[in-house]
Length: 369
Image 1 (cartoon, rainbow, N blue to C red):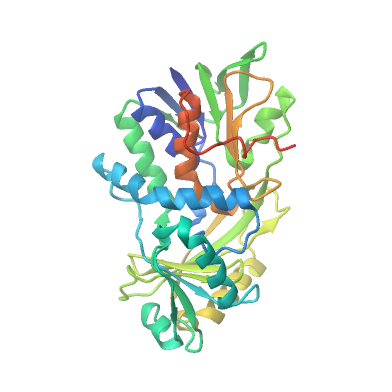
Image 2: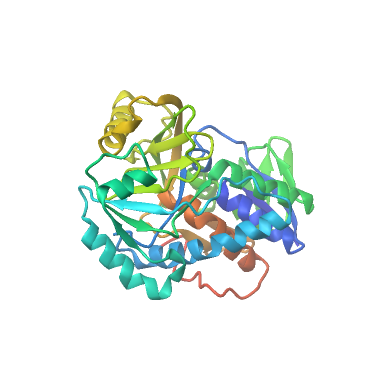
């Protein structure tokens, strides 16, 4: 079977690898435009204390977090170890949207079905600061040992390299149209011509709706701008620092190159405006320094802009396009792309290959009623 995967972000790259691993002939098409969510996003894997009330979101996010260690091990077996993944632990902090009692209550209610989260522990401010030295000196925390982080750029690249070694081809090309014979989608139009396949998987994020509109399909996805800052602490060994999860929409996480990532804005209605704004930078830094004032002397190293593909709910949109054969949609991962995307890619590969999935996708239709 030949499959065209439109989009080489975390979801498309994961699906391509899973398909190639199963023996499918895979062609990946992506113009690698600025603003791709995978290239900008912070990879926090810690859904268990979340206050989000969307049960569909939590079910797939928890399953995805459980899936991560096996996924990383499978990539390592194929020689791919540069993913930025580490089980660093996470510190939940009090914030404007809740306190530690509420977060711990949610977490403990979910632990029987999520032992991989580990046993939570309340930490005094000095104990929390010992794990993340720039932290404010008066903040207690809830420590979750199973929390993890991953670098989206590195993980997606690892998926693509592994897929190519198994025969997949990758083309830096924009898809301008989907071709059809009646109600069967047969290929993808690029500037170089039409590429045909048995199945088309559309994982083009916020850029997907215009490709579906000529088919009469209105995919309810829009871009949401996220502005994210990368700080460097020269000489600091940050590799083992935990993820920080204040009870707000902001976060901090560290990587092994003396880097601390702080974010992020959530700018609904932004369109494809890729500008870094004064207000966005101020918002991100104000929140970060209120939590970790020790970062005030860090070097402002890099800024990233990502266009999150936002659907009408937090739950992703995964499945067959209604009324058409040969067309499957993967979209709507929103701010959870790097948590859910790798696992969702395995589920989409199972769907395309006609196999049964242990995790039902019926609850995640691409065109919600």
